[in-house]
Amino acid sequence: MATPLVHRWIKTECGRAKYAELAARPGPLAKLRLAWFVLIAALRDSRLP
Picture 1 (tube, rainbow, N blue to C red):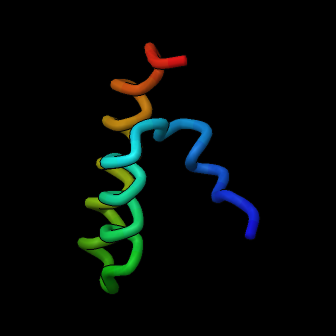
Picture 2 (cartoon, helix red, strand yellow):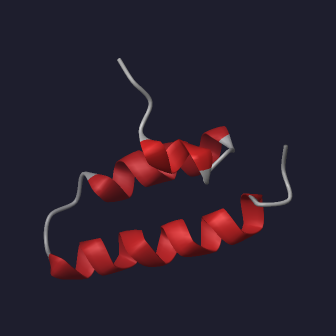
C-alpha cells in the first residue's frame, strides 16, 4: 500500500497515528480540526530529517 502524501510533512509516528485518527472522523468541524493539525504538525516536523 502506498503511503499517504501527508507523511512527507508529518514525520513522527505519534503524529501519523493522530492524523489517521482525525482523518477518520466525519463532519465539517472534524475536517477543520484535521487541517489545523496538519498545518501545526508540518511546521513542527519541518526541522526533522
